Length: 443
Image (cartoon, rainbow, N blue to C red; front, side):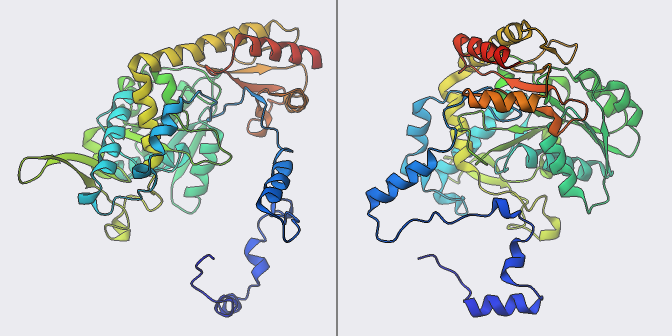
């Protein structure tokens, strides 16, 4: 039985006080999305309930061959990742409020921070960010605090979901968000330089960007710094196995989504945000930061070094109030990266890039299918134009067993025929060939 602190009468009194009825609390949710009863008869045995639920679940498409990306990717997860992270000492541990008895949890977070720093070539990292979108929002707020300015430039090749989140979180704040339109699939240098001024706190870009295109932001870092602004780069961690790291480009804050590091593709998460920055900015970094130290007897230990959260300091002084404990997801990413190692990560990234290049050649050989952008430098994702509406083609391919990609008309005007297709190391040459044949058959 769940513990609910308020009685029905108390909840009714509270609603009456503000003039609402219980159904008003959910009026913003479209009725089509409301939970519906399962209509299970009473008195069923466990076996009968399982059988009925399995029949309902079988209506979902769960065996599609996945070419979907857009920020979340179908990577192979070694069985050892789950075997290690599901050990009870990890699985049951919650947030380390008692650091002296949570040394294992703290060390895992410390090691996670270390691998993120090595991946991004930055000097400090944290833990406890929800996902890539909120990590990017936190980076933006960090830049605003550091520069004491109120203007941010965002290129529209940054994940549109992240951009929606930035606008949502800052809707009631005095922040000027300026979006620049990409130029041929890459960050629009001319537009960004034109928008840069002495009020600009940060320039936000992504690599590989939402279209899968690869860029080098070294020149943008120099342009931003010349105006006293910071460069924030959102990145795809697997790509860092072979691509130039944001730190080497001159980035000041690096964020990203850690789902691709051993976390399964789940409908809505849990996901894992990560963030890294330069040492001089670490005191404005949100979330938990674990450090290594020694005790009075010289023994190695780990402590929560900086935790400027509202639970630890005055709320108005907190750097963030939305972070939570993502330690199990961070541990999963850490285990995944340790199992792969440096060479394994490089090999995985290279496989993704090579297979995507093969898919590009195979799919663009279909009459009427062509690349949307002139630039052909991409990592494992590409935008292809079809001779019909992409959403229509994607729906037909689902019926044939393929989640063929993401139609871009939902977020970009004039791209009704454009399909974003992702290829990971899990996709075989045969699967890519079958997708090409099925796509050609429906066009």
